[in-house]
Image 1 (tube, rainbow, N blue to C red):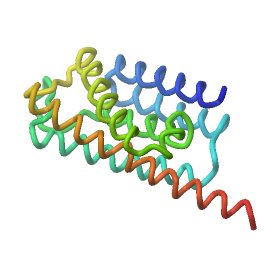
Image 2: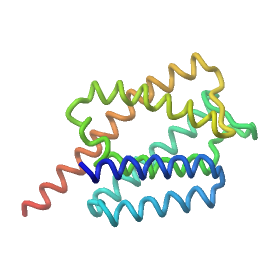
Image 3: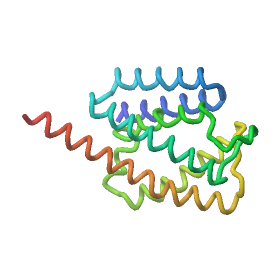
Length: 171
């Protein structure tokens, strides 16, 4: 339980540092240090690193789609997600086998938590950064629905890594 709390605390600290920095070099340095510390303290080997990479790649693609679709925008008006924002994804992915692991058995609850928590995370993040939720009502509904799908999906991915890990420990 202590490690799950530490995982959640480290995620929140790194999330805030990345958000406040809004600088690609600083943000990716924080993300790299976060993943390295995570793996050192509580990592589960190659399978978890692969999960982090897959979830981060998917998340980065989702953010790019949100910007391209006009759900999210930024002060530069470029239509692409800023590089610093992408650094949040590997940090988030470190929670899937730890802080959020308990939700794997309750996917409808994970969908609800993902929808509300994901939206609130974007909402809080936009208040602290140059990223904007472009059409508050429509974009809010899209973010809630999207995160209602994303979090359970990520947890299913994490369960597959966990099963592979358990099978590997048996042999």
